[in-house]
Length: 249
Image (cartoon, rainbow, N blue to C red; front, side, top):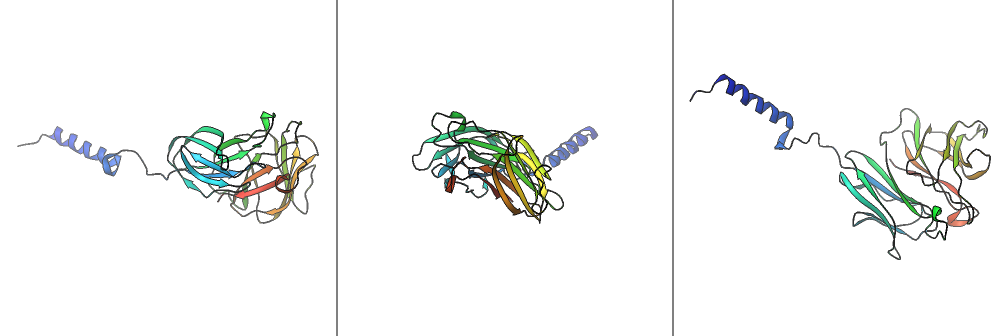
């Protein structure tokens, strides 16, 4: 049987299309890595916390200021929730969408025992962050405001500022992120110098009132850090106001 020229062209086009679609006939594009998430308990007065993706307890019994390992999940819409691991009560839950080849952070801020001050309650936050290291001799800080004022007083916005330990001028800081709101689901971002000791202060926004301070930290070149302002005004011990860094890479 003879095959016409037009038929041969059509056959060649089909072969080319199948080749471009990739092996297996799926045509789904590049095989990108699954998304990755890390969980952190940043609630000063909480019991250990269990963090769930849908119904799976992915980070059980995390204590205050502790982080899970990186956890691989699937590209999709998921429910994220956090439970008290002692009482098993659900404390907060959110819907969240994951994309392939991205990194995410989910953390709690606020108080488990907030009394009648609902704005200070424990909240679950989640966000995607740039997983690519900063260029040159820089480190990247993802700043979250989780500091809580004492009962009866509203928690203010904060300025997060700092510079070289030996030359820090609080009136003219080398690095600054201003007017950061409590429990913002989007971190404020600073790229700062690595390899040298830096001081950072959390101040009541627009004032010289220092709420928490880290007197000296040297960041790794290319490092990405959660920079958490946390604690409760006037408290000591576990709940003392502080700046806490958790390295994410």
